[in-house]
Structure formats: C-alpha cells, structure tokens
Length: 592
Image 1 (cartoon, rainbow, N blue to C red):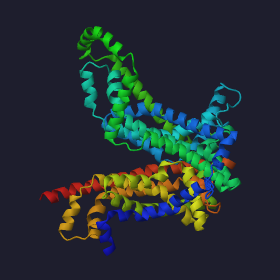
Image 2 (cartoon, helix red, strand yellow):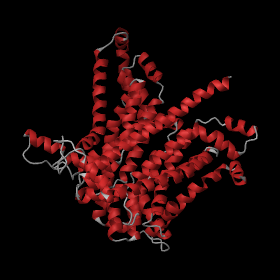
Image 3 (cartoon, rainbow, N blue to C red):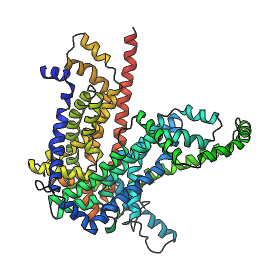
Image 4 (spheres, helix red, strand yellow):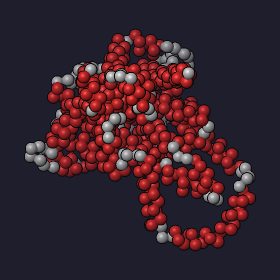
C-alpha cells in the first residue's frame, strides 16, 4: 500500500516493469549486437565493408528497398481514394466499411498468405478456372515471382494504410472544402488545394508504417516469391539457421534497422495536428517558390475571371450528372477493394469444406473431413493449445505492465511522455526481424531459448507497446476530476484506481488484452527463432507445412483463424455496449 502511494506521487515509477522487460529482452541485446557489428572493443567497420563488398548482399538490400517502396506506393494509390470514399459515406455505411477493413487487419497474416498460395498456385483457383474455360492449355506461372509478392504484401498492408488515412480525414473540417467551393473553386481544385494538404499527416503515418513493416517482411516473400525475390529479412534468417556468425548477423540487422530509422527520422513520427499543419504550409510555400510560371499563370487567369464567375453562377444550383457518375464510380471502386481484401479468405473458407483428396473451388461436395483431421490430429491440437497458452500468458503480462505504464505516462510531463512512449513502441516501429534477432541474442544469454517463458517475454515486448497505445488513448478522454473527488472523500490511491479509474478505462484495457493476444497468436518470425525447434505453435506448424507440403488441413486451420477476429470484435462491441448501458443507467441516479 505504501509502495503504491509512493508511485502515485511519482507516476513514472509505474513504467518500470514495462521498461525492465524491454531492456532485458530487447534494449541491452540490441546494444550488444551493435557492438558485435563493429567488432568491439576494436571498433572497426570491417563487417559493414564486407557486407557491401559482396554483390549478392547489395542486390538483396536494394531489392528489399525496391519492394518496400513499390508496395508502399501501391497501398497509397489504392488506400487514399478508399479512405476518402469511406469518410465521405454516411455514418452507418462508414462504420460498416471501417469494420470490413479492420477484420482482415486482425486476421492472421500467415492465413492470408496461404490464401494467395491457393489462389495463384499452378492448380489454384485462377488457373483451374482458365483451364476449364479453355482460355489456357497449361497453368500460368502466377506464383513464385515478384508480382505474387506484391499481391500478397499489398493485401496484408492495405488496411495499415487505410486506417491512418481514415483517422486523419475524419478530423478534417468539411466546411473548409465547402467554403472553397462557395468561392468558385472546382471540386478537384478544392480537393487539391484544401483537403489534400490537410490529409498529409495521415499519408505520412500510413506510408511510414507500411514501409517499415515491408522492410521486415519474411513470411510472404518466402512463400509467394522465387529465389530471386529474397528479402534481407529472409537473408538474415538463413544466416541464423545455417551459420550463426553473430557479427555478420548483427551487421545485416543493423543495416536494415538503419534504413528504417533514417526514413523515420526524415519523415518524422510525431503526427500532431499542429506539426502537420506546419509541414503542409512549408510544402505549399516550397511548391510556390519553385514554380516560376506561377505569376504568369495568375496573370492570364485574370482574363477568364468574368467567364468563370458567370459559369459558376449558372451551375451553382444545378444538379449535374457528373456527381451521380462519380458516386457510381466511387461505389464500384470501394466494392473492388473490399472484394480484394475479403475474397481470398472467403475462397479458402469455401474450399475447406471440400470432400476430395485435394482442395478444389467450388467444392464438388461438402464435407468436414479437414476439420475432423485438424481436431483429430494430436500434433495440430497440441500446436493450437500451445498457441492459446502462450497467447493468454502474453496478454496477461503485457496488459498488466502496459496498463501500468500507460497510467504512469498519462501523468508525466508531455515531452517526457512522448520520449518514453516512443521508446516503448520501438519493437513495434522497427522491422520485426531485427526484434527477433535481438530477442534471440538476449534470451540466449538468459538460457531461455526453447522455453515458453522465453517466447512469452519476446512476444511481450511488442504486445506491451500495443497495450500502451490503446490504454493511453482511453486515458486521454478520462476526466481526472473524478479521481480528485474520490481522494477528497479519503480514498487512497489504490482504492481510487480500483474503484474509479479502472472501471472507466476497462474497455481500453480489454481492447489492449485482445490485441495483445492476437499479436501473440499470429506471431511467426520471433517465435521461429526463440522456440529453438523444441516448441511448435500453430503458426509455426502452418508455416512448416506450407514450406514442405500443402496439406489441405491448413485450409481448415486458416478458416478458423479468420473467424477469430470476428469473434473478438463481437466481444469488444458487447463490452462497449455494456459500458455505455451502465453509463446511461448511472446518469439518472446522478441527476436525482
């Protein structure tokens, strides 16, 4: 009790458990890896020079950057209009579309990668359909190439691009665009000069997240790409398995980390609205300065002012057909994006009920044989039970330390809070293969490789950051006068937190626990290194079967994994609904 009172006076102490796990599992090992890469205590750049001296290494590095840039560009080109159309829709339609974007985001990335293997394979859905129609006589090479890698990566990363864009666009005051239209600006001009600059913080956030995540992609390029499509993360994982040369592994990991840090430093990760407006103003002034034809354009535009004024007056109150056409085109575009996001999962779910000895679409007859195989095979059941146990342990640990850290950070100075929050989020904002290497190196020194404790600690570094973000967002809307009122009635810090604060932030805590569990349940890269081949989780068994043999049982497993986020969303909705109902019931009591 006295300890909690001291921590209440110094809330930054509540972050100690989170930082302790982060330092032991990730912080100290990453420093030791850097020292190994520069041959400490000799301190030389021999390893880095040796890396760039090999042509194959340079080719893989540039290929990693190229694939990440192209995938990010495609996500932005597709995601921006999708987010714009979602925000422009009615409230009910908007909520439905956002939910449809969130569901694939929460779905297992490994399951979605497997879906594209089923669709693009030599005997996949597309080739079988074209063969049956007589369009082709032999299967097309749709898989194990760069195009398949882009299709899979964009499919996984597109929700990561859309959600920040939607968040930024929903904060834009639409009256500004309407004011531009009322001053005679055409719809495209009003969008480009008013709406688009205000949405740049969302563009920056989405692009940063997608690019950094793509740098660390391992599963999708390895499953869908060929030998020439190797990413640097695949190269690092191969070095760990084949010849564990810590200096070479650390060098490759820090080169990848340096690229991610450089991009984060150049573009910035602080997406506050004020800074976003400053960046937008600077960008616009820079464009005006380099445009030498700007004054000439304005001079000639004076001659058309009278004509434009008359045209605007005549068309102001006319309902043109272009708006109806644009609505149709926008609706079709959003539908195509949703089909792209959800059709692979639906196809796998339908194929999982096939009664044949191999997967077929559509199934000739319905059967539950692959589900019976999954539940009847001890290896599959054991892997699933191991994943559940580890996921629950990660959720409990990360929720406790993450909630304490978020509560403490919420009561510290804003500048210190920003720095500490970014430190906790480091394992989430850098390539996952670097986190995996650091965690492996740290747990080797602790003797926890091949143990469930080691896997839980390694996965908790990222899960804690997720919990901190979600609970901090809940605490941002928390009225602290309620705590002061409780303390004025002689309630202690622990009693105030337990009876006042925790019930009000419970939806955020539950949401953080759910996302922490999903983060753990779908984790492959870190678990693959830390497990030491002695512990097999469900994603690891799926990954081994995908690489060695395409077992139709994976279709049933993937179908079950695709239902998990739907169930979690229902649980979160019920939690939110109950808290809202409780608030409505308590208001009349307070008023009386």
